[in-house]
Image (cartoon, rainbow, N blue to C red; front, side, top):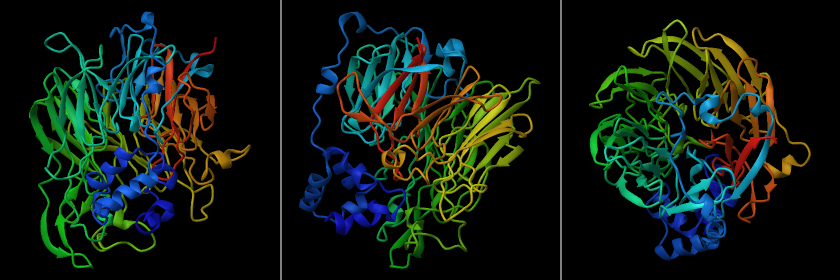
Length: 589
């Protein structure tokens, strides 16, 4: 059954499909959900219930007990949690989502970051990748542990467990810690693969409430971007697009759309909802196998909103359309009114980009639009738009795109100030999870993969720095393959995938960036000099005794606080290297 229904995509036919090895790292619960209600539900409908059970039984890992948690509980002296001071309330670091931390906020200096040592490593059993940023307060790291479905409160110095919360589904988003709510309490928020948002008491790990974060009933939704807390409200980005289901010829493509939910932070009640387009309707067209088509769809919001309290604006970035007709809200940067959710202005970076999973492989599937109707690029925005104030008082709103573009806008009206483009971009290229700012510079990771016999001078995978004022380039680090000393066996594909995709982090003038091939780099933000390099794609001894190794570094997996640097290593999507290790670094003693 696997060879008949799955192998064509999962063994190389689709670069986005999880590898066979990655499927074998999933639990039965996760596989059942994926095939019945999740992104592979259309494919799962081709199977009978008995066939699905057999296939899941063949692929799933053995059930994982909670011993990996219970055996690593903190002693009484380390079990008490304090929420003061807050080192990192969410992945963005500040309301602008600048990914820039001071030495005081992080507890790490520029000098420290050139001289780190591994403090501890925690193995997460039953997962093939780690994608989330923790929140950090006091001596506690609040960590969403991926497909394990567990949120862990970990002591920052030892990695022991202070409490654990079972979300009942694989976790997808990063953790967010609220400020003081009206009743004086604080909440910890995290989202799961079923597009549910959990609010948890950060002191005890007890659930306060659970809500469904979907916009349209019956449409598969994801909560990928980091919610943003401000002034008793929580702003939650929503991604629903039909991008995966579009690859199935019999799917009436497509019906998802992006949005933002403004919630009461204490209760989870909705205050307003913004959507990137009207609901999809049947267009009167059929695909080449006779299935009716729907649209418009897409423009999901994969990224996190940046907040601008002075203007009362919220900035979001969007992905491509997934079915015709194309809308102006796709591949765009949009300013919303924080109080009402109404659109104030819109900047569309690239128009008429309609793409879904039918647009892969040598021959496109029936739900892929024609070249006459779309540029078919998949040039999402995957990272936040960051508002920055320059020394002269002027401001820029900067964002990176999968096309390889770096855009700088006027936050007053969305007008273009300058742009740069690095490399060719593509479905797996360009800028994925965002940029970071450091003083007067913006830092752009590029993930362009090798392939097609291109020469080195064409491939711009690496990290590139530009002046915020005018976009002038200042320095670049071009990444090249590192497959020697057995890395070709530890990291299959290291000769083709060696770009920077993960959300970067600036700490006291040093840029922390993760490579898809598993290498961790720290650069000086002024010169581009490498201050520190560490290979995470190896096996580790863990504090909880779990067999674990590192792999690709991707998504929102880099964080810092309480004098420590934390990196989740392993990312089993897009045929990258699986791994299941959370690493904690400290200044060398």
